[in-house]
Length: 205
Image (cartoon, rainbow, N blue to C red; front, side, top):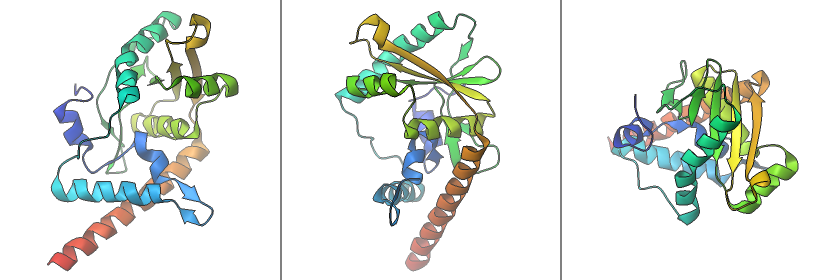
């Protein structure tokens, strides 16, 4: 099984729309798509033409989140004593080439887990609203679409807070309507991507 954050995993992601970037694909302003969509498309064009991923941006908060993920996973396992978690690599969508997801784990037969170890205020906002941010809802639905799973447990964890505030979990069930919207947006984005690459290669010919 392919492990996440390995050279093999990075190579498999190259040039594909991934669940964690779905919010960029669907980002809109009042006048249409936002620059986030254009910037992400530019990234993927470069990846497809070079066959390489550029070094990703990383800061202390992101590194801390990655390091804390196993602790959050352990917290989840302690709270959900009947949950069997299987770590996986990249899973391609069964019918949309170029669309893939890397869930933080498969849970039993029907579920997934998505772990976030964000900055403290983001975690507190999640506690206050009781809901994951939209970008995470999109990410989890993309993961469910790629894996065929029916639900995803969203976990937010911040060990800097008192124990009764440090851990949040909410089960998100598959939403057919949102999945249809995602499918349409991803297909449009990938078609636009192919079109842009064709224009570039034709000009060079």
